Image (cartoon, rainbow, N blue to C red; front, side, top):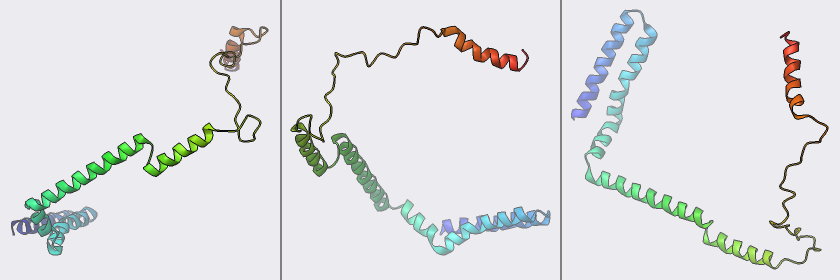
Length: 154
């Protein structure tokens, strides 16, 4: 009852402000204020305000929100655990079976086999290629800069 009265008073005050704004020849602003001021009375007429008031002061409604929050929390925990384990039980079972099939792979001559790894002993591939001896280091870097400076007359 009080919420409906407050909403009606807010709407009446908003319409009064809209009328004063329209009197000052600011019609676009007046129409916008009128639209905003009609929202509270519209909510009262549709019953939304009464539903919100009943929900806000109902312990059962708040307990229901608590149960929904707990359900959401449990759902998120199970999703996190599932991601850390690597998927569902069926997916893990399929992954183990695939790993067993790959572990018993045929010899290197077979079409599906991969090349053997070289292991940590061969470090030549990890080294970066050295520069050719005929290219001086400093001249390359500054030649581009010199060309730009000459172009601009500096």
